[in-house]
Image (cartoon, rainbow, N blue to C red; front, side):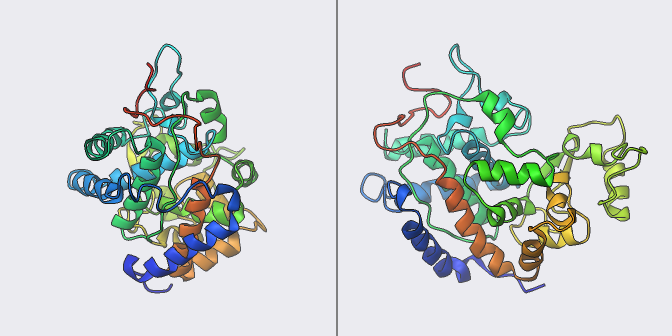
Length: 334
């Protein structure tokens, strides 16, 4: 395994990758790196400052904020719909199965929004805040830097039913994962790269305990879990135990953004079924990519910078579509 690369050493390469993406995706030219350069030039530093403060008391917050960006973008595009609370006209995506009692960090998004509204009222969308928070969260956790493309506007509604079907599940098979990523314009490399976000953060027992008991037709556990890891996880999550108990997604460096996720998969130590499927599915096209990223952290970081920009380009609302919400939890006219 290659030695760790620092965020600063990758900044230039990541900036080049983001610039290259602009030329490769002309249809998304409405999103630009300098969108707020005159209207809210301090927006990135505001986002990072709030997250740094939150990290002092919550080491999980960076992974949680990155997850919000993922779960927002997979449902009708990156439009901030995940942030909307229930109302007479809105069924919140927060109550969809992939998010219910597991999506978190909304209070920090509120703090970021309040700080930005104080500096630049009515200017920065909640969808762009999620994209900026994702970038700052990865960078503050030791991961790569990339230039965030901005200019998204916020949706006027949510899609709870879509959240239930579109967001990748921890129980998804390899084919289901490929299908869900393909449905939003992301390829196999994006799938393996973005799954690498599980190099930090936590998951509840309910997200993986079915692998530990009665997974096979003869009542055994998932055979792709290594024996020592199976023993460890069964102690943490006994049958009929508390399903909300948390486990580290990466048992080696749980709070750092690095490439250990991929070496974990090679040892059959992937926590979620959807993670281990990328390496343990026979003849899967993802296996060689897992091997590459496990060997070369720099390659993973560069790919992550590309893939998350690709994800951030999923069906953004721009121009006169949507609105700039004053409060990320509700539409302006409510």
